[in-house]
Image 1: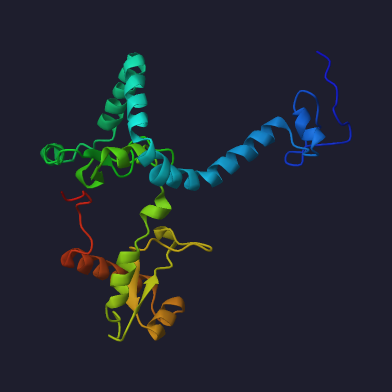
Image 2: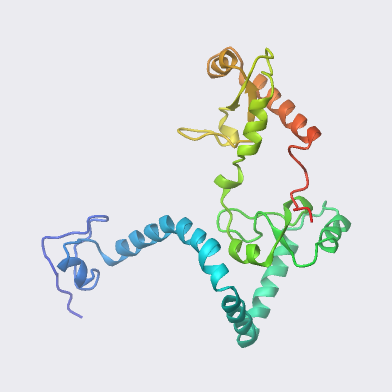
Amino acid sequence: MLVTTVKSDKTCLDCGVLLTEDNCWPSNIRNSRYVCKECSKKREAVKRKDRLPYFSEYNKTIFYPKHREEVLARTKQWRLDNPEKRREYSATYRAAKMQRTPPWVDRQELAEVYALCPDGLHVDHIIPLQGNLVCGLHVPWNLQYLTPEENSIKGNSFDPEEYMKSRKYLEWVASLPCIHCGAESQAHHLRVGQLGAGMGKKAADYFTIPVCFQCHAGCHDTTFDKETQMRWCLETIYRALKEGVLSYDNRRKA
């Protein structure tokens, strides 16, 4: 087939390829958007990703409560109309669960989590077994109880950034006296690359220590080395576990 150039002197603004009838939408040329089809798709994917938090919140707070019965009926009908796909999904999920179950896990404790699930709630994996970014393990501390609506909205999604944030924990850390001198403190995030800190990025909120203004400044220079700060961080986490601020059990209490 003969390939002709839509605009012989125009190239894609993103990848630089010469625009032709085959690789460029005519509407892009008419509207002076000199982008090939592949780059247009990539741009749309970025836009959809940026809009995802808005639509997720919209579905959770507005659409689903208003159309709950309709959504449940449509889901039930899909399961009845697609038994093969449902069986395939179930088999895939069971295989993933077996693959993500480590040999050292206490299977009796796992069974108790499901047996103690309150009526009307689902057992959900906090970090999904088949996530896009990260895959969790089938272990008791990766399980939580959710309502069917919450479980449906959460789906297979997982946001590591949100998971590692806790305003409640930061406020608790700031309420403690300075771990070095005992003065009034503030929460300091450890600046250690192995904990997720980096250029323009803080470590998770759980890797914080209570230090006063002067000691906080000392954490940013050579006054307190990384080993000392890590030891203080572990002491703070142990105290949080002892006082019940943090828990090994992530499941919702009935």
